[in-house]
Amino acid sequence: DSVAEHQPGSTMMYRQYLQNVYPLVPCGFALSLLRLTDANTFLLLYGAIAYFFASKMARLVILLGPPASAFGGVALGFGFDFLIVDALLRLLGYAAEEEEEPVGKKSPGPALDVAAREEPKEALKDAPQGGNGGAGLLKSKPKPSQLAAAAKARRAESRRAETNPFGGVAAAREEAAAAVMAVADSPGGVKMRLCMGLALALATIYAYYDFHAYCRRMAEGSSRPQIMFKATYSNGQTVMVDDYREAYWWLRDKTPEDARVMAWWDYGYQITGIGERTTIADGNTWNHEHIATLGLILSGNEQKAHSIARHLADYVLVWAGGGGDDLAKSPHMARIGNSVFRDICPGDPTCSKFGFYQGGQPTPMMEECLLYKLTMHGQRGIAANESLFQHVFTSRYGKVRIFKVRRVSLKSKKWVADPANRRCDAPGSWYCVGQYPPALAPLIARRKNFAQLEDFNTKRSSEDEAYDKEYHERMSGRKGPSDGPGGGGGSKGRPGLWYLGCVGAEALLGEERTYSGGADGSTLAEARAFAKEAGSRYVALARSGMDGHAFAIPALPPGWKAGSLDDAGCSTPCLDFHAYGCGCADELCAEAGVSAVRGEEHVRRWAIYEVVAKGKKKAKKGSPKDEM
Image 1 (cartoon, rainbow, N blue to C red):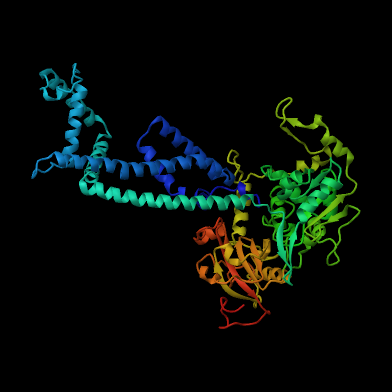
Image 2 (image 1 turned 30 degrees about the vertical axis):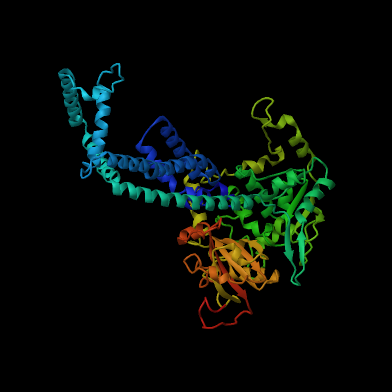
């Protein structure tokens, strides 16, 4: 689910990360096959193995970098060699021959010229070398014994060709190659090759600068600090939101050094690196079952969650305040948890009853869960049970809340900290895998290890196959729950939004946009509520299955319509109002047959709406693209 880097590789992903090298790889691979050498054989094997693993797991696409670069170099090298280097040598050779030929005498043609050039080489190869280096042997007649030996060799070669089952194919290939080369080596062919070579050189220079700029954008996007950002109030005042650093420093300064912090895995490295405290999970998400245990705790009710958390952690940290907080990620937590603990959402892989109704009202399951109580603590009359989870910190703008776990099991904490209970890779090794305390043994025993798509070394059971199929059908919208949020045949009436257009570039949404995810990006009712809460006039959506991405936009930049699109990706139906488009993201865009616009890292189609009074009409009545 949210561990997206564990999903299989896709064509869209290869295009995204290989960019301009992507179309060159098949050419280089084919050229390497045509001329097998030790180096080419190694490259072919390296490429095939790297592609196999990249196709199994998205994060392993990094393995394709070296072989893809090498295949791209093979393709470009062959192009420059054949179209420019060899063509220039041929052109210079023709010029020299024309100077030597008497006026009015024509060359017998490129095919005969080639044969004439090759004949002395064969004679030199077969003839004995004299004191003059063989220079004068070209003028002497071959001996009868040499002629007989050459005739015998030709007869033996002819017999081998007749008995070889692939001899005809090889001969046909050689004849075709000779015919092509005869045309390519002609004066007109050589000039044509030079023109094509010049075009290839110009295209390569342009692709180089484009690739260089693309790499810089990717690097900046991957390395840009994201724990501090600017925000704008409805009155226009701009502030710097520093809540996340503030919370991590509070952990560093106000908690014991051996404190263990439980949070969703997204923030694990930040808690360790900035807060200098042990985290229960981080970005090393390969242990799916462990992440699912966190999902079980956060999606369960307070009593059940506390009975598990007290054996694992001293503090619980949650992101709050909207704009991609833990409530926006909550569907992922329940789904990942349910893939291992099937009693979280029985019979529903997408946990459709764990979410919000239209208008932002939580479902009963959401309202009772620990995550909702901690995230909404102190708002709308909602409060966590302080006898189980004591509130100790809220950041300045309410983006982070920290709770102390009451009645922590010191016995479990001491057992986990004991080096004798660590399983090391080897005696004295630095790599030691921890274990769950004995008190959680009954819980761990009932986990069902989930064979994901990336578990390519494990045979998946029919039950896993059925679960995975059901999950993807529901997430893609091809099959939906009969009840719960987003279920049924869609809402009636108008959502209180006017459709303005669709773009593929995120920059066209303006710089002062506020992000949210989850249902805000797949349902118009949630998107409208999100925009109104953010005090924005516009909202843009890009649906991805049952969830999506959304931006609340105070004002659209001038000229945004210049990048407008109108394709199948823009028309992907919303989950609540099926007659209206919610745009698309990633795999849903791929299913619609659309790709990323030039300069964009991700495939997106942003459907842009203006927030208006519900039921208000614009232009033609009954038209989803004109009234909302």
